[in-house]
Length: 413
Image 1 (cartoon, rainbow, N blue to C red):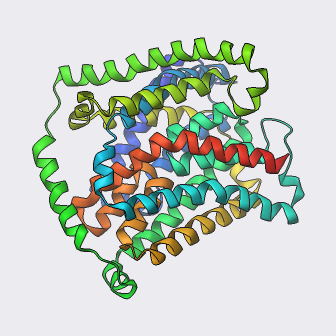
Image 2 (cartoon, helix red, strand yellow):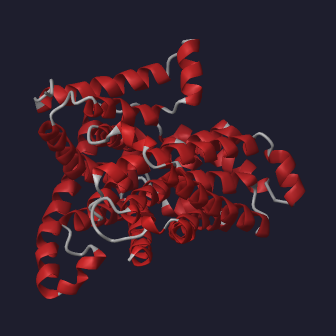
C-alpha cells in the first residue's frame, strides 16, 4: 500500500531529495567529499527516487502524473534554455579540429550502438526483436540520447520510441556507469596532456589564445540576475514550449492523414514534433539578442528543470533491474570502446591537442554536467568551452539519437 499518493507531496519530496543531493555534493565536509568522489551526484538523483518506487512507497498514478508534467512542460522548456545559448560562430572559432572531434564523438555513438548490438547478437540472439516496449534496441535509443546530448534528449527518446520502464531502468545504469568510467579515463589522460601532446606533435598554441578569450568573455558578460531577468528566462522557456505544443497539435494529425506510412519514422508522435520544434526554435533564438539571457543563468534554470525531470524518471524506475541483465553492461562497454577508439584514432590522425579530444568526447557522453569538469582539468578558464560544446550536443542530440534509433530498429527487426 503506497504511503505517498498526493502529487504535491511527491513533488515536495523530489525537491527535498534534489536539494539534499546538491547541498551535500558541494559540502566541504571530508566525508561527503570522499563519498561523491566515487558516487556521482547525478546517479543519486535517479536512484534515490527509484528506491521509493521499488519499495512501493509512492503511488504509481501520482508518479505518472509528475512525470507527465515534467516531460511535457519542463523538458521542452529545458531544451530551449539550453540551446538558446548556443554560439555557433563562437564554436567555429574554436577551430576545425574541435568541431571535427566533437562530431566524431557523435558519429561514434550513432554507429557504435548498432555495431555493438550486431556483434553481441551473434552470441546472444535474444537481444534482437521488435516486439514491444521492453525491446533492447528501444532502451539503447535512450543511451544514445544521453550520450550525444543529455538527460533531456534521453527522455525525448524514451517517449519517441515508447521505451518500457523496465528496460529503461537497466539502460540508465549502463549509461551512468559506462559514462563515468570513461570520464575517469579522460581525467587521467588530462593529467598527462602535455607529454601526450608533445609525443603526438599536436599544436597547442591556439589553446593559450582560447584561455585568454574565454576569461575576457566572462568578465564582459557575466552579472547577477535580477527578478526581471528570471522572468524573461521563464517567458522564453515556457513561451516557446507553448508554441511547440501548438505546432505538434497541428503537424501530427496532418502527417497521420497525408503520410500514413511515416509512422515508423516517429512522424505520428506529438512528442516527437514538440521536441523537434522546441529544439529548432531554441537554436533560431540563439541568433537573436535573446541569447544574452545566458549571461544571467538561462542554462542554470534549464538545468534545474532537467534535474526535476531526472528525479521524476527515477520515480518510474525499478532499482533492482540493474542486477537482472549484466549482458546490457557488456553491450554498453563495447559501445563505449567503439566511441573511444574512433575518438583517439581521429585525434592522432589530425594531430589535435588532447584537450579537443577529451572535451569533444565528454561533451557528447557526459553533457553540460561533466564536460566542464574535464575541460577544467586542463585549465579552469576552459570550463565554459566544455559547456559550449555540450550545449551543441543538446541541440543535435535528439536528431542524432533518433537516427541511431532508426538503425537499431532495422538491425533488431
